[in-house]
Length: 202
Image 1 (cartoon, rainbow, N blue to C red):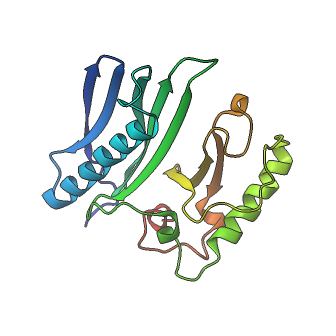
Image 2 (cartoon, rainbow, N blue to C red; image 1 turned 90 degrees about the horizontal axis):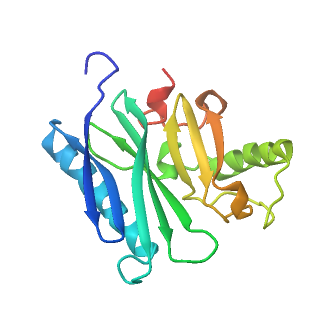
């Protein structure tokens, strides 16, 4: 393709029902059509999975608000996060967040390991960077941090890989989501060049 910058068009769809306020994104007017279809199918499946995880509509008390945030839409990379807040009574509700990162030419959704060269110790490298950051930020942890999960949540934004942890995954509710932005240049030697993260290097 010519230039690097090929943002996709995003349309926001709204679903409003009793106890559900939902905004979700869809890629529109995009070629190849197969890539558009793949991305939209993945998004809808992820939105539905979050609803099930939060107990909607099974639990009649659950009130859900769901929305999304766009993180990257350039260089044939679309990275976004899906948010889902559910309240079923009690002191406070719970928000979950899921990151999706696509190659917009193929529609492929990338897992964390696919951003890195095969057999590169990406878990060890990312975990060491996060470990150092946790010490600097002095966040009291609920559990000892040993390493990220191989499929840890992430998105791509501003030439950074942002690793994040769910509410309660590492720290108390008051700390919310914990985010760890890591510059692509700190990971340059292990990044798979054809991956969405590789496209941020140049």
